[in-house]
Image (cartoon, rainbow over all chains, first blue to last red; front, side):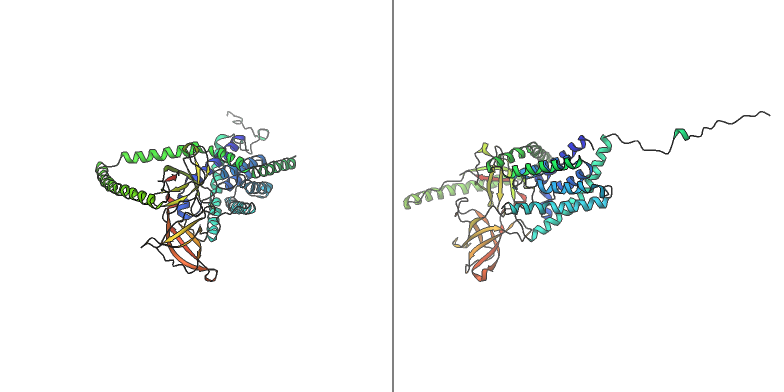
Length: 188
Length: 272
């Protein structure tokens, strides 16, 4: 993980917030907008240090709130808590497994809006909630879960393209090499 | 060492969140607009791309279709011109009558067109962003509408963009009246509130309607002018169905909005 990857994640987070605000097709079609930030936080937590996770949660949350009616800063804490927990347990998580990526994305995308709505209610705001919110929650969770493996794949490809790769180790050892010549040539 | 870095990061983020959440409302609003301003180039780029696509589409339209459209527009223009002459006459007569009775003169609406550039990314709010702001003399609480009817009201205003809270958002409750279609008489008054039970963004609830009011599906719902934000007589929607509430003390009706809030591209802000 290098600084270029951090910048790439921040750039994708910025674009993700813009796309969520600009494109209305999905909301008109299925009645809910998918949030891509939790998936990005999951990726960052499993691939970067805690400072990068904090940076993405903070900037992503602030960008999201700046385009929303949410009070500024309310989305930061849920994203950061998710990032912190995943980062803390990263040694126990099989990062390369598609199933693990999907389940982490599902959990993060389900928990983030829940925490945000609870925080909003806690601060005295009155978000639009009802039975339809359950459907929106389901769509957000599944959408985020589906995006997480895509996110891992794309960033891994990006890393492969822009960073030095470790030379694969072989079993060859020069000190154990059996040197052969062409053999003694005998003329009869 | 690692643990120390954890604590420091957690502390910094917590501090930042607490500071930002406790900023004075005006400062937080300015900060929000400044952060949102970062997205302006992207919104402009997306808008230009959309315009380019439309222009490209127009360039390849067949000549016969364009001629047909011109013909239709000419006819419509002629019809509207006739209506305008009649309306001017009616307006003059209305002004004379108002003067005779001593009523206040009705001020004509002054409208500013605006383009919808974005929507709220969160699912629990219903707001849009439009491309007019302080530069265009837009102020909070101005009415936003389309030729079909009411859209919402302006809440936050930046230099060149504003946020509009749509009808159906928890922050856009207002008084409305139900009219009898035949004689335009007022049947009942109530409060337009969000309908959280429906996924359809075009359905809202009309609540606190006095029990015994003769509400029927199909009756038009208009702004009542009470509350001072929306002018009287702007079309909101039509009643879909009615149910009793609080043991018959109140009635509740579902109202289908006349404006398709899912397909908003262009709106008008009422300046006066």
